[in-house]
Length: 182
Image 1 (tube, rainbow, N blue to C red):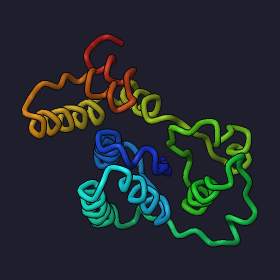
Image 2 (cartoon, rainbow, N blue to C red):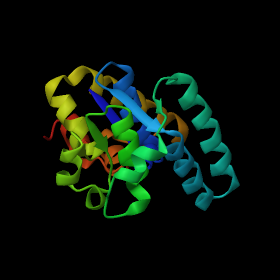
Image 3 (cartoon, rainbow, N blue to C red):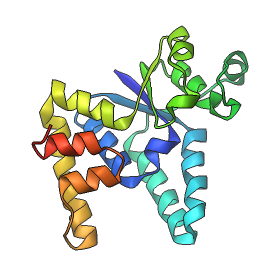
């Protein structure tokens, strides 16, 4: 299964680590475009120069670790597509160009299911997507979550629980399930 990652799911670090960690364990193939990565870097500017430098470094690592994930999007493809927010058409175009099965996004309103279905696509938010993968095959999600939690604890000198970390990362149902509550 191929999944196009929207900028809004790449930018939050924990969310990106969860999605790419599960992908690295073979659960799905991630895709994005250069423009999606540029949107992530642009969003980091709101947090200041340190965040920009970190986003640039992480983008370099992203491209190094996933050399076949970046999809080229022909302009002619974008011109034939429609979405409620024209600024998101490039995301849909990247999904179509990459032969994705779905778009992972937090932005459901601007990616109507009917429009996506016309292109053979569906959409999912990261919480539902990862929860579904966990229910089908727990190991890749659990291993990734444990690694992400360990790194969060290392960087913040302890304190995090799985549920709290994933809730903060907008994946509360997955956090609850991984702590045995769902």
